[in-house]
Length: 282
Image 1 (cartoon, rainbow, N blue to C red):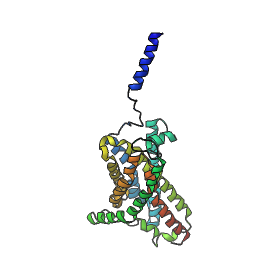
Image 2 (cartoon, rainbow, N blue to C red; image 1 turned 90 degrees about the vertical axis):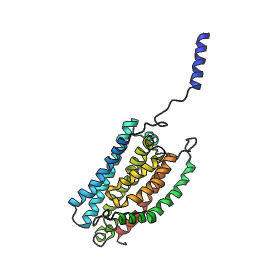
Image 3 (cartoon, helix red, strand yellow; image 1 turned 45 degrees about the vertical axis):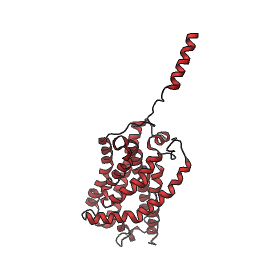
Image 4 (cartoon, one colour; image 1 turned 135 degrees about the vertical axis):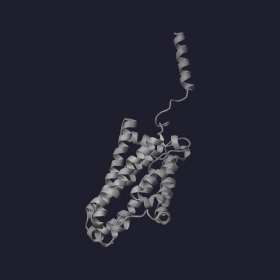
């Protein structure tokens, strides 16, 4: 009995002094460069093909182009969600809320020192939202103009820019077209949350440190910009916004919400513009 008690005490001491076992959430397996590029290509190619190949081949005139481009982009974004869920299930064995929170950082911001959730850090959404809006209204257009000046061949084709939707050829046909507003909202949900954010800030960003080190957030922003081959004239401005305003805060505080909420600002603005278009007041 005495020897047994001694062994129990020694076992307790060993467990007390031994380092904690690492888990997949605290020390996640990092992706190789090939895997990062592979996932990037898997979400980039469908968007570019739909916008530059499928849409011009089928659409006739500006109205058809606007509608079909919106449809192909929506399909591409839904594919991103499907791919993200496949990867999540393969890596975590589950697609439940706890797996999403752990793997995709779909959680309250974490304290950088203790790693504990801190709801008060949600105040960061205010300055991030302001920064995203200023970038969208001023900095990104300036970068886009500079990019088109330096690379004049990278510009929207006829009927492939946002202004076409409000042109004389398209706007009258959109009055009362509430189905298009529903299509836009579907696109937006996958654009600012279930598609792009799940892939870039959820799947990729937590696994990029092994290749890019402390600059993983910067590399994530570059990849997100280059992903926009379907709208290459926007790449420069998007790199700035996604890197500094979205990827960096998400990495520092391990919360995807710090990117999702600012990203959704553009949806709110466009929604009200489309609502006016549907009502015939724009």
